Length: 80
Ligand SMILES: [Zn+2]
Image 1 (cartoon, helix red, strand yellow):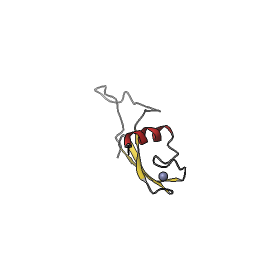
Image 2 (tube, helix red, strand yellow):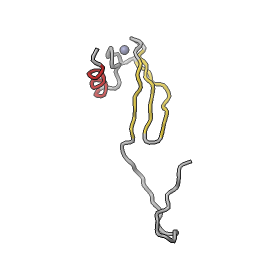
Image 3 (cartoon, protein in one colour):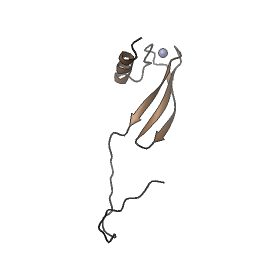
Image 4 (cartoon, helix red, strand yellow):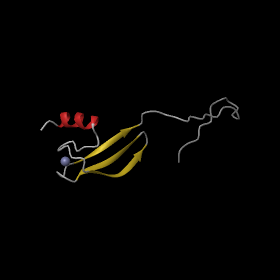
């Protein structure tokens, strides 16, 4: 079985099972990590499973504070 071929096919039609082309697939909870997220996917028809991996693609709604800092560095809020 050519996993790479199956993966490429799935990436173009990710609503279908990468093994049997069934659309009867289920996604588990999404685990978000810094810079990306991963979601376990399971096919109810053939029993195959895999994980969708999401990577950070872009940054939007950027708001950078300048000023209020004597050395002129931007103030950026730290997460957590
Ligand atoms: Zn399947």
